[in-house]
Length: 85
Image (tube, rainbow, N blue to C red; front, side):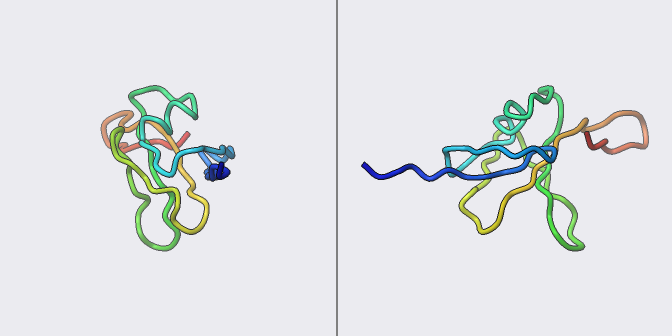
């Protein structure tokens, strides 16, 4: 039987190993212990903005490199778009 590949990711600067090639925003929040009303973002290197990941949106972990995710409040008060945790 072939050994199942594990994927290494970071969520809020903490490393996790996951068994599935695809992970959703909701699954990322569950792993991190973040509240359901928080948002999830994929850190993007360079000048491009970080990519928001919806609860039902899948991210392919087989892409080269380690994925860095962070969670935080989507909106806090008027004028603030989100706050990183």
